[in-house]
Image (cartoon, rainbow, N blue to C red; front, side, top):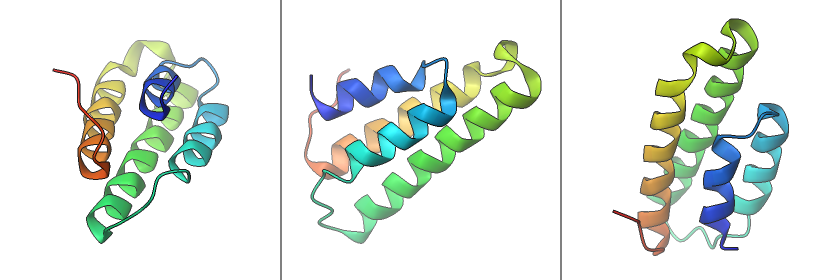
Amino acid sequence: MQIFDRIDLLIDADDCRAAIEEARALLLQLEQRSDALRHAIDDFLLDLMTLAFIVECYGRGFEFLARTLARRRLAKVRLLSGGSTPL
C-alpha cells in the first residue's frame, strides 16, 4: 500500500492519537524537497491533531469537517511531493 493510501485510511481511524504518530512516521519517509512541502506536512499533521481534539472533546458526531479538511491537506502534500492525486 502506498504511503498516501495508508495515511488516507488513518484519517478515519478510531484511535486518532495512534493515527497521528503513524502518519508522522510515514511522512518522514518522504523526501522533503521544499519548504512548501514541509509546511504542507505540518499543516496536515496539525489538522490531524485538531481532529483528535474534536473527537476527544465532542465525540464522533462533529468530526466530519475536520476529516474533510485533513483529506484536502493530504491532497496538497501529495501534490507537492510529486505523488498523484485522485480526482
